[in-house]
Every structure is written in structure tokens, then in C-alpha cells.
Image (tube, rainbow, N blue to C red; front, side):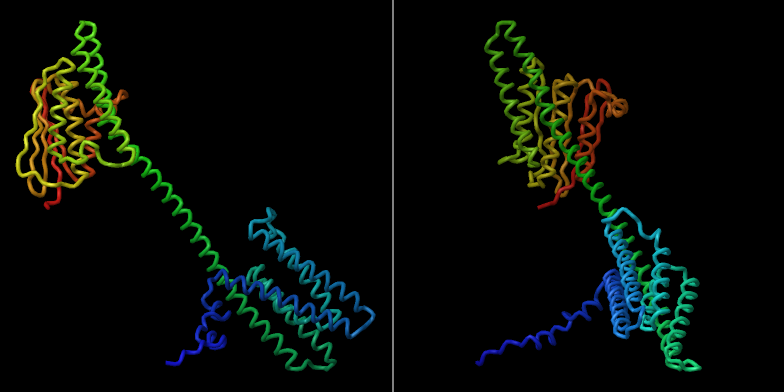
Length: 436
């Protein structure tokens, strides 16, 4: 098979017409089109001024250098105004040249009239100046000045021709040019307003995005703080509380001369500290509880019940804690496993520290699409309504219950606390899970 010849550059351009400058201009934004129009206007002014100056010098005359100098002054005034306006638009100048816009326009127009009086070759500079009047003056004032300038151009052409009556072309040409300039100037003004509206809309969108990003960042910071607060309360705070109680019990045993009991309690202190260190290292990385690594939720809860009884006994309390499982254990999502384990930890810590209970039961039930867990104790109980008012106490009391409610609510579950003074307490949790 013969090789396909590579297309020539001309064929590439024909196959890709969108790369041409005209097609690029068609697809450009309003701001880009305005920039092109402004550059074209300035280039046209410079070209027409240069042509008038060259023709004036070529024709001769005693005042040709005067008109040439006047043209140079006009060029300098025009260039100074456009440069100052561009620097201000780009934010590189603190002076606002718009305050001097009318003065600048008057000076440009006066210099042009002076040049027109000296040579009709500068008549065609009127067309770029038309756009300046239409852009800087109110509409009625701009139409009046455009009409007067058009009459001046017609008069200059009539004076050059020397005819008793101006030729039709000398009238029709400037008038049509003025009409075209007015229409184009109005279109430019409409395009300018559209570009300004787009710029303001873009600025507003940018500010809205920045505010949204800030609010999302703040929400993320608050959510992370809540997560760390829950983890610290349910792990480190409870572990440190156990260490304090066990340390006091060990000190009491040493004071009584019972070194063996003190050693056992210090061993529990060391084990509790090691467990909490592992918890701290894991939750700062956003991982699950190490008590669930390589074990099921049932096994983790069983170890928790046994450790609760051991720590209570080491602290001198008689608390029997056991786990009851109803239904066939199933594999539930990790967030639900962590939430149930944390709930059991917080509830049993409250039982050990506050309830003065003799028995505690953790009842776990697998119900297919749901899993429930009840933590019951036969301790002193409390008034749930009175406890609800202490959730924001200065000493942090009540944070465990609020943290537990937030954790369960985040998984679309429900939590209920039933208690009364002298009648024990039941913490009931229900979580939806996926049935495997």
C-alpha cells in the first residue's frame, strides 16, 4: 500500500479553518473584541495622522512645519491619554484619568480643528475622533458634536474644491461616515456594557466561590474537631480516668503492704495506657479502633466486658459485666462497628464511674437489616431530663451522651436512654445496616 502523503501547510490551514484570526475573533469574548476594537481605533488614528502630516510636508507652504508640530502635539496628547487610561485599567496607576476625560477630549478636538483649518488632509481624522465623542459624552451631546465635526469636514472639502456649490461626494461621504460611526459607536457602547456586566458577574461568582470555599473549610475544621472530641472522650478520657482510679487503688494497696495486689493493679495501669496509646495513634489517622483489628464486633465487646469487670475489681468495686448476643452474628459496615464499640465503651465507663452498679449487661442483637445494642446496669440511675440540661456544663460533664447521640445520628440510627433514680439505666441503640 502506498504511503499517504503528508498534507501541505496550505491544506492544513484549509482543513482547520478555526485557526485563522477571523475565526478566533468570531469565538472571542466580549472583552477580547473590545480590546481589538480599541487597538484598531488607535492604529487608525495614528495612520490617518501620519498620512495627513506627510501630505502637509510634501505639499509645502510656509506654515507646513507649524502644522507638523501641531500634529506631533496632537499625537502626544492622544498617546498620553490612552496610556494613562490603560495603566489605570490594569491597576498599575493610582490616578484615575477619567476625571480628566472631558478636558483631554476637548484638547484633542481643538488640536484637530486647528489642523483642519490649516490642511484638509487632516479631515479624515474626524472618524476616529467621532468614536471618542460617542464614548465619553452623553448621547445627545455626542450626536451634536459629531454633527458639527461632520459639517467642518464638509466645509474643508468644499474650500479645497473651490466650487461655488459643494460637490455631492464631498457631502455624502462625510455624512455616511458619520452615520456609520454613530451606529458603530452605539454598538460599541452596548458591547462595552455587556462586557462590564460579565466582568461584574465574574467578580461576584469569584467572591461567592471564595466564600463557599471558606465556609466549607470551616465546616470541615468543625467536623474534624467534633470527631477528635468524640474519639478523645470515648478513648483517651475514659482510659485516663481508669488509670487514675487504678493508680489510687494501687497506692492504697501499697499503703496496706499488699505488694502483690498493687503489682496487679499497676499491670492493669500499664495495659490501659498501652491500649489508649494505640487508640490515639489510630484515630489521628482516621482509622478504625485497634480493638476491631483482626476480630469481630462480638469478640471486641466480649473483651470490653471482661476488662470492665477486671478494672472495677482492681479499683475495689464489685461489678459483673457480661455480653449477650441474640441472632446470628453478621458482618456489618465498619462505621457501625466502630460506633457500637464506642457506645459500649462510653456506657460502661459511666457505669463503672457513676452508677455504683453490681451488674451490667451488654445485649447485642442482629436483626437482618438492623443491629441493636442495649447496655443495662442495676445502679443508682439518674434523671435523664435533668442530665440533658448539663450537656454544656463548664466541666464537660454530659459530653459523652451528646457525643454518643451525634455518632449514632451520623449513621441514621436512634438512641434512647431510659433511667430513673434508684432503678438503673438502659442505653438503647438501633442502627440500620446492609444485610449481606
